Length: 415
Image (cartoon, rainbow, N blue to C red; front, side, top):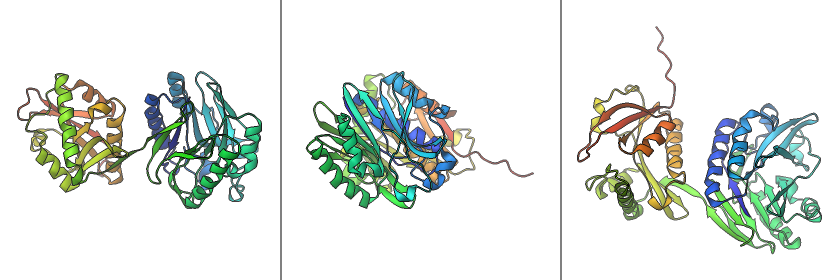
């Protein structure tokens, strides 16, 4: 069995944004044949006790249907963090979606003192049964109570998973405790923590896996979203922690070679959108010097790149854009290493670009796509990019479509 531990950054109270982010991470876990994916405490709303009562709902809410659909389609069990309503009050819960099975909920049984003004305690333990393994679940502070893991052990749990939201001090304490408990009860322990601001503290990630001897097998860092894939049979852990950052000049040769490899791959498929004169070594070097080229890496392995700036091709002047008087961001030279294509990495890069645009109050994003690259056109259209016109670039037989995506709805001018 393969268990995926997800480390997430949730935006405070932004439920739909966080649901979208969760679904993207689940999609990333599927190619690794994950049977179970678990998210941090209150991951859908963020760990925000002040907002919990306002945002709490029931596990039957239709907004969670996409999780059930993904579960059914991919035979994967999913656990997400959400405050839920009950007759006694608001619970800190994990909503559990299992393939073609009615969804269930586990609610935290042992609360921290400062949680008691906002939440009530759950009353029962939940176990998951997947591929002959019995898995116990715990939520944050209760996982640091020996009795919680002890009871799970007495009930025959093969593994224990902690869904948490912890600061540096909390993580330090958890690392010591989980190592000791895993060894004492001969039970692997997995921890899913979040990153970013939670309530009045900074959560520092470092999601981790300990084997049944208490040895730390792998961990994620303290600043990026990512996945840990634990193979229960091989007792190995794979790290999948994608990071997007401004490329450095030291990346130049590797990045340029990736463009050359991608060009070859396109031509192998009869798509001649790039030439010997585009993109060139000098263009990529200039992108890096200007700080407009961002790289996507998994650890130190280069996955893809994207150039993001306000610079527009001179050919764009002939296009009837909708937002000519607006603040516009432009996408150039999106590329994914051929050996990592068809794994959602282009989507990750575009999500980054669009979030960057929104955070900096751009009204729209522009780009161009080769008319013979049908899969790319479909990709952009699915992301709501609209064709505004056509342009020709040197040495290409066919036109490029100029596309635009509205990010902020313009308010009509007062008469």
